[in-house]
Structures are given as C-alpha cells and as structure tokens.
Image (cartoon, rainbow, N blue to C red):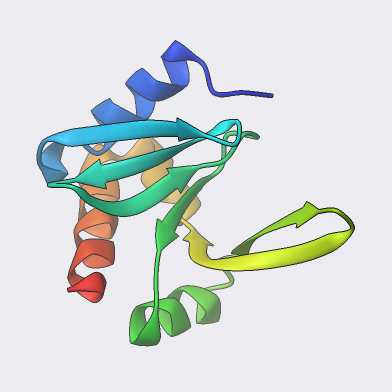
Length: 107
C-alpha cells in the first residue's frame, strides 16, 4: 500500500505546529521534514515513526514503541525510527510535542 494524498494531508496537518513541513515519497512511504531535517516517516502501511537515537530512542523503547524494520531480499534491517505513541495520532498538540522532541534529540 502506498501513501495517498489524504495520508499526506493528515501528516502535514498533524505536525503543522512543528513548523513548515515538507515531505518526500520513498519506498511506498513518506519522509517528513521540518526546516530540511527529517524527523519522522510514514510507512507504506500508515504507521508514523519518529527518528530517534540516544536517550530519546531509549525512552520510546521503554514505553513499548516499536523500532522500524523492513525486510529486503530476505534480510531484515532496522533503522533509528520508533513508532509515535498512539494517543498522539488523535491529538495534534501531542504530536507536535513528540515531533519537537525528535528534532531536539537530533540536534
């Protein structure tokens, strides 16, 4: 399943408070940027993941958030992205808070 125009509108609206949002389609999903910095992805199956490393990644993992992984040529590869807490999907203020935390952890 590839992302739709409605998916893109949803993500842009959800994270609008982070700042100007841009995106790029890739591998059936979407890379989401603020000020040119990627901070989240939307997978082809509709799941939002936040870019995370260090303490922020540890916090998301401790909360039970799942690390992004994809299989290609029989090999599973994981990347430094974790699912965004589900309650933020229905709460733009909370989504913006998580988005800003992801960006802060990258700086």
